[in-house]
Length: 494
Image (cartoon, rainbow, N blue to C red; front, side, top):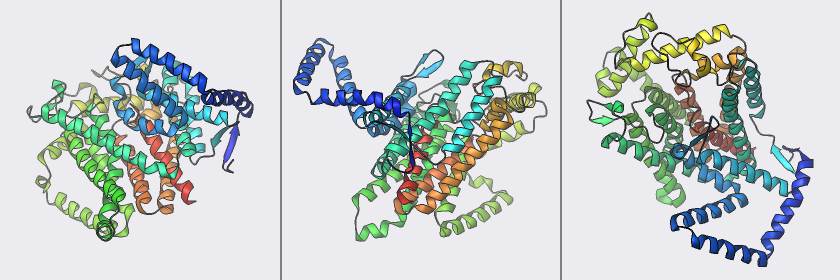
C-alpha cells in the first residue's frame, strides 16, 4: 500500500474478501462455467434478435468493466453528452446511461478493492477544499424548504468527488492519452451533430436565426447554451495540443511519430469542428469563455506566445478605439450589441421586452431574485438546490419561471449556501487553479499540453458560469475526469 493512501472500513473489506475468493473460484470452475454458458445460450435463442444482441453486448461490457473499471471510464466520456437521449425521471432524480455507468464503475472499483482485502481511498490533492465545500452544502440543508432538491444537488458534488478519487486511484499514465482521445472524438461527434442541426435547420422553430437561414445548434443538450458550454470545455485542450503539434512539425519531418501525428490531426479536426459548432450555437457566454480560455492557454504555453498575444491585445484595443468593429463578423457584433440596451434597463419588472433583449432581461431578473434571496438569507442561504423552490416568492414582474437556477452560478451559490458557501466554494475553485499551475510546471511535452488545456477548461467554465450554470447534464463529471487526469500527472512527476 502506497504511503499516500489510507484504509477505509477494513472490517467491511474483510467481509468482502470471502466473496472475492468465491467469485474467483467460480470463474475457474470450468464445468460450472460451461453449464452456465449453455443455459444462457438456450435463453438467448428464444429471445428476439435485437434483444438478444443487446443482452449479449451488455453482459460482455458488464464483465469487462467489473474486471477493468477504467474501460467504464473511457465509455463514460462519450456517454455524458449523449445520456439525455435515454434518461428517465425516477423519484425526482434523472437516471440515464450516465448515472448507471457511473454507479457500475464505482461499484466495480469498490468490489475490486474489497476482493483484495481492504478498501483504500487515495489521499488525493484537492480533497480537503472539496470536502469543505461539501460541508457548506450540507450546512445549507438546515435552511432548505425541500430536502429532496437539496439531496439531488448534493449528490452531484458527491458523484463528482467520487469519480475524481477513482481516476486518481485507478488511472495510470498510459490511460491519460486514451482519455484525451475520447474527449476529442466525443467533441467532434457533438460538433458534427450541431453543425448538421444548424445548416439543415433541424430543431425548434424558436432556434431559427438569420431570418431562418440557420438554426442555433444544440446537440443533445436541448438548449444551445449548455451545448456550447460543453464544447467549450474541450476547446482549450484541443487548442493546446494543436499548438504543441505545430511546434513539433519539423521534428516529425525528420523523425515521424505516427501516434503523435495522429493526436495532432485529431486535435486539429476537433478544434475546427468545435469553433464552427460554437458559432452555430450563438451562445455569447460560451464565446466569451472560449476567447478568455484560449488567451490564457496561449499565455501559459510560452513566453513567445505571451509576447505575441500582448501585441494582438494592443492591436485589438486600437481597433476598438478607432471604431473598426466592422472587421468582426456581423453576427458576432449583433449578438453582443443586443446586450447593451438590456443592461441599461432601470426597472426590470416594467421593462419593454423584445425578441432581441428577452434573454438578457430574463437573466437580469433572475440575478436580482438571487441577490434578494442572499440578502434575506445572508449566512447559510435558502438551501442547496432550493433556488427554484423558493423562487416564486422572489419572482420579479412577468418572470415567473424559475428556470432551475439563477443563470449565474456564483449568485446561485450565494443564494443557496449563503456567504459561508460562497467563501468555501471560492476557496475550493481557487485551489483548482493553484493545483493546475503546479501540474503545468511539473510536466513537459504532450502531457504539459494536456495540463495547459485543462487549465483553459477551468477558465472557460469559470467565465461561462457568470451567465449560466454549467454544472448540469453531466458536465460536472467531465470536469471531474479532467481534474483526475491532472492529479495523475502530478503523481507521475512528483
